[in-house]
Length: 122
Image 1 (cartoon, rainbow, N blue to C red):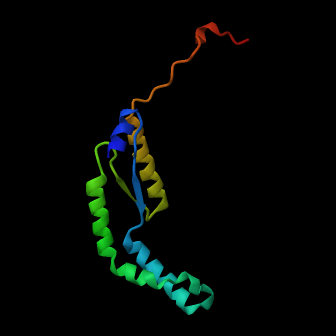
Image 2: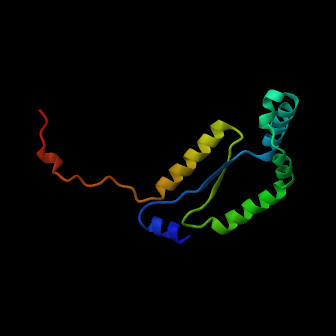
Image 3: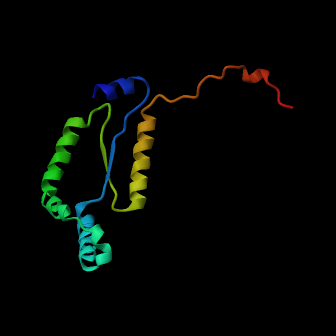
């Protein structure tokens, strides 16, 4: 967290994003891919028995994410969770977060190292 505080004080911001599909969308699609991987020997490489165990741990993963956000999201570097179920919305949400974060920064054009009024283009 000191890193984020130090970075923010130097007129930069850390903006952590988690772009994630909801489980409701992932599981049926994954089930179909898993069944394809079992039924078609050309696709056996797609199936991983470890995925079956990981599915049983979904609630634990969710709790771990919630704990991470509670501990790591700070005023200096707030976490944004972006749903990725729809690409257009994901892109829109990310753009809105970035616009907001840029607006929080004291951005300005640098001063020129010459007098623009002294230059005459012909």
